[in-house]
Image 1 (cartoon, rainbow, N blue to C red):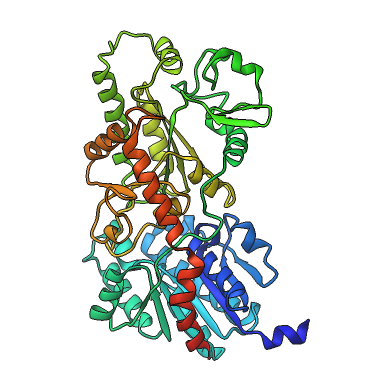
Image 2: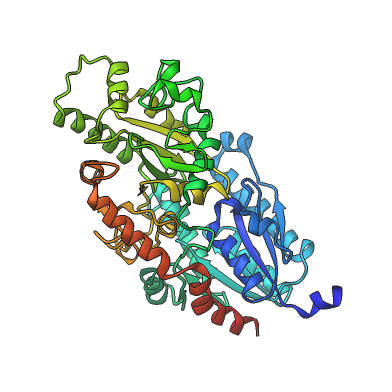
Length: 480
């Protein structure tokens, strides 16, 4: 076994961040192990578990670095804390890349973050006589510019650092043609475009998988304590269900029913809208909140509802009656710094037909949720305007149509009125909700048409095909 491993090539995949929240680098590791038959060492911070196919792969080892927190120093000087943190991260990275792991033939590093990652990997590649490959997901200096402004000295220094060490790489991959052009024209870096594509475990969800998922998530969707809304009512006998006698069927979920071996979707179920967010400034979550509020008010106006109608009666009537416009349940997945702020804003909204749930799903359940939803929403606008939201790629992989925030290169991914729609304001997004969900679930032809387009997109290409066509030749040439 040992002699066999010595004959096989080895690559280190480097992420100065949570590997569980870095799907593209997970897919790189899987492809390197399976399609190139290489040994793969992942060096990353801990946090969230990667997909089970990564965790249990016999050719992949994960080395988990500790995160650096300097809260006390940050209170004294944020600038000093950043410098000290970068220095500590540099030492930790070099230690892992030069001592902890076996010598690789190449390092493949995610950018951003650029500081101190690119310098640490470049030094390690020189010391170990390995190749140095960068996978450009975005630009680190543009992300830093969101909080400091593009003209700040720290941002300009970061820009120099990123471009200087970026040019030292033996090869580069990037996520869009627009980014490829920017790197070539202004950075003197030749990069190969590797579009994000979903791996095979992102696919449409079967009825059985939907039912099992919604039963597992029942307590998350309908918490026993907390705010009451159109999903979770005060009336225990209607709690989380369409009719009171459904408490006699504990195997039922909010969306599905099972009778014997037959599983079916409930006709008066809410429409399920999923949005995955990192809760950061480059995704303005307030747009979705405003659009949801507008949908709620517009439906009440179209139906001529009186504000004096008791909410409990209204909710029960919605459940039992014909739905011209359905209830909307928004499930927001992800972790990030602005999550708590927006959760407080959600609690203050008074909505009749709309409810929000925030949760973090396992790497195995997340694709199942996407494949079970009716619509996806992407709020990503890109700090550089040159990258594409991988969440949309994943949604298409599961056959889920998308409403996406519009920006410069999004049309490289979202084909308007074929697999999704674009919006530039909360009002536009609310208009799209009204148009797509009218007549839900059986008489919404526009939504069905977009779903067919998303399914066609999902069947046209997968990560393994895209990686073999574009990444494998570059990596093989560099290693050889």
